Length: 93
Image 1: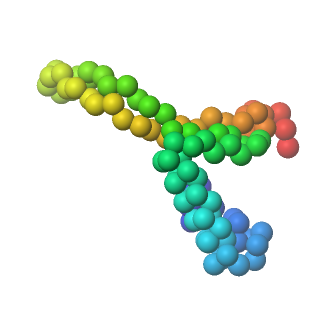
Image 2 (image 1 turned 90 degrees about the vertical axis):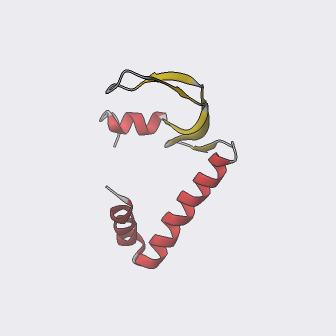
């Protein structure tokens, strides 16, 4: 499922594609901005979005074998909640 499919599924429940598009965009933008600021977004039963630091490291180019210094960076991280995990494992409806 991509973003368009998600909007279509939500518009089926809300009855209006414009409202569904605005809702999906608002949720995604809010999560992205909040995580980018370094804050955690926790949605009970679904999961937690947070900013994580990736340490600097040395990598190797597989084609040439040359080593490359990769600088430290930040990456978004998601941890699924217990209810989400149970649903994926078929333990809950």
